[in-house]
Image (cartoon, rainbow, N blue to C red):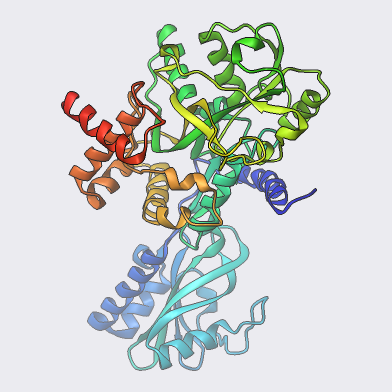
Length: 490
């Protein structure tokens, strides 16, 4: 069935094409604040030197009145141009009857705002002097003296490009956790000041490379185990790379191993055909490593989950594996009555550095797991990463803008209809051995008590330790944390 979310996934793939127009070298354009400031400069000169000197300076295109795509124009209350910093030829002409492509009367609206309100914004379409194209414009207007209106506008199409932040997510051929997370971010955070552009990716490993090397990619979703493996691989080759930083640790991604009835343990998969998802996916990368660490030699198959489940049903493969945030769409469709079982994944010291204990329960998959039954497994960590841009660059400013919108709205993301995994997110969480982007840490320092942040961080470290007994009640788990905190001084 072509479900609504599948439509969204297809749309994301189309949207990704538009990303090619957004590059690291995008031109600089004026902002709303700069437009307002330019109007104020006109007011100051008008008060000091009068109308004639002010209009002459504007018509001479003095830098203070014409900067990039920002420029001043002045109308009298009959809609006649008195000064224009971009098109001097318009001076003396009446724009009273001029209508733009949408039927709007820009001059009349400018005068109306100046006379009735004193100041405000008006929208219309006008030629952009930088592109020579007619574009959507938003202009700030103020009354100037007793007889004039002054305006400075920004071109909204350029603002979209300037304030766009891209995030590369997951592949629709695997599972949709990353895609839905990216879509949630876009739907909650995007407004006229920030547009988040989700991009369909190839999986966790390629997402790291794309954030590191692909022009136009600002953010990426990947797994902590993959990040750690990349760093270890670089160190083995003698490469030190500090270009990847993280914005926030997100939530746990649980390992789902689905087998045919008759299999009861992971060890029984020795020598069997096991699907590890598509090559390049996060599941494929991390689970190949997990089986190797556990000393289980499988015959690896690399298929999308839909096709793998069909081959599992037909007996062509013994199991399929997916690392994704529970409950996942593909796993939620399974039924134990159809001959499927979840296999437990043991948490051993060999997995300690990159994974944490986790579990699958009846509440997660009621058609696969009996009430009261728990399937132990392992969890990876989802994380938002970014390129470590210098703080004085435009790309860093975009990341900072994203953080200043994302962090304050985490509560909204944690409510339905957004992915339930958002409820696990703790912005104070840290990732051992990795650096948090300076803008993210600055926001936390300014908005969250340091003592609380440190305590939450220690609790996260406790949860990631190998000594946690996940069968304890919440109160018992809290008491375990207090004992751990005492035995592990700061």
